[in-house]
Length: 89
Picture 1 (tube, one colour):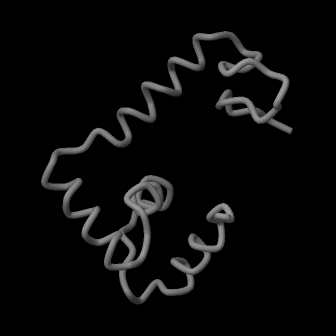
Picture 2 (picture 1 turned 135 degrees about the vertical axis):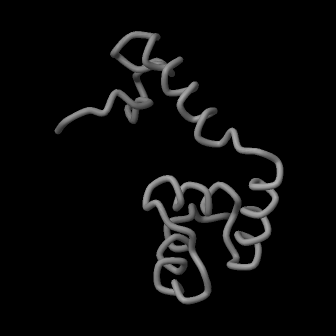
């Protein structure tokens, strides 16, 4: 399996993984840059996400991954995102 040098998935690995601590900082910077948006855009995304029943993070991640904004016509995709949520007890 190929690695994208992201955070480790193994429980026995240190938080920064086996590829050196530099990748940990690079991923942290990339995540910060992806979510570092102007206030007006963040508010717009939060309102759209709430209207669709998604979290801000889920909505923004969909924009970053697929390059498009979700709307009411994307009910199947929204349902798939909601199914991926972890179970809450």
